[in-house]
Image (cartoon, rainbow, N blue to C red; front, side):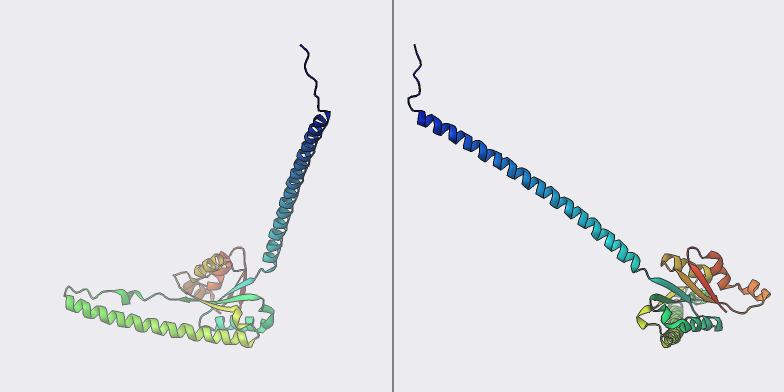
Length: 229
């Protein structure tokens, strides 16, 4: 039996055209998607480059903002005053530096911390009150002493031309090795320079009392030490 032929050729042509149009639309969609994907990839790559440039810029700015940090050990001795006077003479040269005045305060004398050795609660209470009063008085004297030497040193540095905002102060309870205390604090704080005054001691005095400047020079690492006489 013979198959019937399509009696509507126009319908067949329309169907063919419609199928072809769909394929064109599909190809355009694929091309559009590929273009969008490429644009996204380019955008991501550009963003990565910009991030790297920004990070490099921040690193450069950080390096450029490096601040010289100077630690100055001070007390009320003539040697300490000479060290401050030397820095003051440098004046505006140090305006880009951070200058910290460091004072090693002595610890509370051991005899102030002793109890009375009594078993009577009333006597112990009275002795403790007396001890607390003595300690309070001693701490007040130390505070006033430290303020006096800090104020004097700051005034001389400011008069020499150093900006007040660049001057800081630090109090630390000293140990039996003040030279080591100074170096330890400088290294922990990232100081690049330590300034100490040198007392004019005889050889025997240096053996008996020890030389702070000598200890600082001996122990300091990765920083410079200025010894002012």
